Each structure stands twice: as structure tokens, then as C-alpha cells.
Image (tube, rainbow, N blue to C red; front, side, top):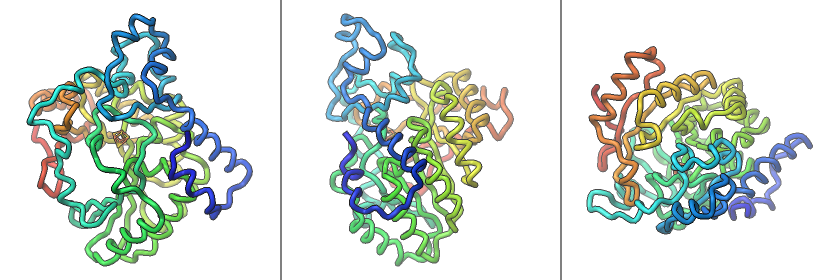
Length: 350
Ligand code: SF4
């Protein structure tokens, strides 16, 4: 099913697309619509036996499964430890509750001056452009975030932008979500039009996992629109493992790079997925080949239901030392963590 916000904007046919661009637009939306929402179907597609499926299935703890077919295609059939599968398959360990792991570990509700805006950092504000993603990552720090209350429509954006327009200290708008590229071009471009009217804004940053999980989203119309923006555009993609980068992903990142977009990656350091030096070295090298600089390696947040993914500071530091021994400095990501109440990420000393 196509997400509601996509269906809602169909009446606003403002972006004029050529037939080829229309075909590109329909293609990614169809791929998104074909996403798997049932873990059993996911495991069946990966050719697990019925007995294995019975063993692997677990309650989703209220966080739905959502995986686009393009991401499933990069998983190894029949491997329960596949690093991509582990990021999206609900696990029994999600039911474990401990006081240290909470629903709003970053206290973002405290930095929410108006619905749809998170304002933590000096000079930058984050706009929740979309309430949905193209994939649901089990470790997500926003898995309990009240998106329904922050659901976006054009009139709600206007209210958020009116709030941002009054703050002349802002230089950068960060589009986040959910995932801003899960919006149609119609919705996204009209939001960009509004942001570009704010005279104090110099930079636009888009945080998106779409170039990785659904590379067909990086259409020629999108690249053209970003290339024509008067703002400097930075895209921070989110990739945790080199197995996520296939030829299509490389090509999508290359298209953005050619359009003048500065391409950075942030990863989350995740137990059993990428907490070993070989995986992180492969990831940095694969990203760079795809024109993307490895920028941040985040220690996981203390999010309820994600303790089984947790990796501590010391292990993170040891891994960065190993990366420093093997890679040039520009391929070693900065190890960071977010701390509730702090107006910036905390850089971890190595
Ligand atoms: S794409 Fe990002 S925001 Fe969406 S579920 Fe994954 S980690 Fe969370």
C-alpha cells in the first residue's frame, strides 16, 4: 500500500515531469508499495524452512515490520545471522525491559517547540518532513516517537516554517523524519520551495536511508531539483554494513554527487551486525567508492527494546583504533553518542 501522505498529494500535480521522469517516479513508488510487512513472508522469501520460520518469528512489540524488496534482494537466503536481516526482523529480545532503556532516550520531547520541529542545536533546526520511512530498522532511536502527533501536511509545514522564519540565528535546515525522501517529489519540492524563501538559510541537510534501501528513489527529477537549489545541499545517508551497498546504491549516490550534493554517511554501531573491525573497514571503503564519506559512527541510544544491539564506549574506542591502523584518516568515522539534554553530539575521545 502506498503511504497515506503520498496518496494525499496526488491532487497537487505541481511538478511537471517528462514521461521518462514520470516512469522513474512510478517505479520507486511501486517498489515501495511492494515492501514486505509480514516477517513470515520475509523469511519465506529468504527460503527458510517452515521449522526455522517458527523458531525465528517473534512479537514486533508494536513496531511494524517494513522492508522494501530492493533491501531483501541483498540478504543471503537461509542465513539467520545475515547483517541486513538482523536489522529488520523483530526479535524476542525486543521484549526485554530495563530501566536504563527508555522510550525517549534523547528527551527530544523537551526540544520540540512546535509540532514537527526539533530545535536542539545552535544555528540548525530539524524539520520532521515525513512521518514514515521506507524501512523500519529495529534499533531505531525513534521507534517510539509519536509520529502520529507530528504527522505532516502542507498546512502543518507552513506552521513549522512560520516558526523557523522567526529565528534569524538559523543557517541550516535539516530534513529528517521518518524519511524525507519517502515523500513524493510533489510534496518534497514544495517544501524545498518554502525553505528556500527563508533568507537566513544557507544550507539544507537531508537525512535519508532511501539512497541505500530504495536507490530508485534517486530520480533524475530529484537530482535536477537539488542541483538547482540556491542552498548548499548535504545528504547524510545511513548505511551500517557494506553488504547494503550494491551497484544500484553506488549509482544512486553517484547521481547525487554529480548533482553537487555533499555526500556523508552515518552508521550505528550495532552488536552482531557491524561491531568488528573488518566489517567497518569494508564499509568505509565501499562508501568511499560510492562517493560517500564515512562521517559518524554512532553508539546506539538507550532505546527500549533495543538492548540486544547495544555496544559500549570501550568497544567502540577499540574498534576506531583498529580502523585508524588500517585506513587513511578521512575514512575513519567519528565515534559519537547523543546524550539527553546536550545541545550537540558528544565526540568520544580515542
Ligand atoms: S530509516 Fe532511520 S528513522 Fe527510519 S526506521 Fe530506520 S533508523 Fe529509524
